[in-house]
Length: 405
Image 1 (cartoon, rainbow, N blue to C red):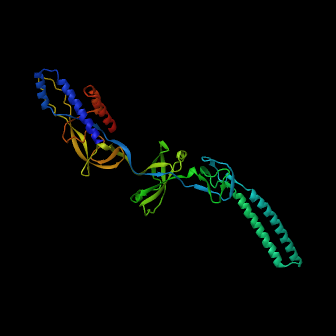
Image 2: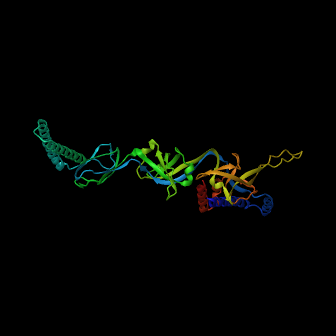
Image 3: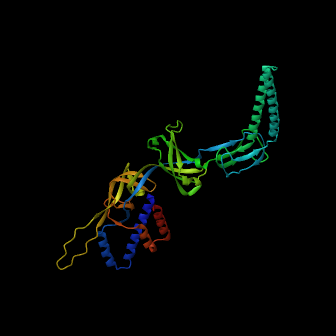
């Protein structure tokens, strides 16, 4: 950016110079000599562009990238075994907890279930007869106990089959959105095979890893500005909900969990890439200047400002009326300043200037302290002298000005 200012300033000075040269042409040599002699006695005015500081809030940020995650995410595994008869949902469908997702073949298990029920009735009858015989004194206690054990075993086998049949129906363990489906109608499904993935969109969070040195500046409730690649035209707000007090041994970072505002959740997607700017500190009503106006040398910061000197009024001769007061002369002055927070465009000035200080924002890097200047707008000067410059020079100058702005 500094090189752009230099180019614009040089072109501007060239424009003014060309304008002066064009005015000299066509005059008589004697008059030109007199004007040239008068011009030599006048100081050279260096054109500069100035701005006043502005009062705004400014914040410092910790910037990082991450991906959106869901705290409630479930990979649904099949508990049953058999051929898939029907799939009820597709990827992207919203489901409720307990909703049926797929059905596996139950025919063999249902046949075994009927057989088991018959066995339970048989064992129940045998147990009841043995119990009655023992009560009448014609049966043995051991026989009664054996029939009771067989009856209990038959009931347990029946309950196991009932569980196996229920497992042939795959249902949703949580409410959410189907993000993955691996089962197909007609395929054989084994016990423990992953068949669906479900994500609860209300549980999206933003995990970030902050450097250890930032731990003391982290607070619950801190605000972050978030931009997401899948929603480029929007900026979202998130807040710190949880801070892990431990530092990761391998990375030297602290894990921080941020929550999104409720109205933002409709735009979120799991694993979407996010750029995060966590607000670490904010100064309100700060004095701000354009970042590029600052001159840095030997770890110190300077600004070029405009100082005015009003000439003392001269006493008019008795026979002549008083002349119009002379315009104030403007000089460049270099002052040291103390800086504070900064962002991509502006920087805070803590001391050295006030709200009325006029700061040189174009041409300051080649300007010397004490030089007499004229405040102007470089872009207007370039356009006004367009007929004296080549089109390439005009385009280049305006392009550099747009970059600076």
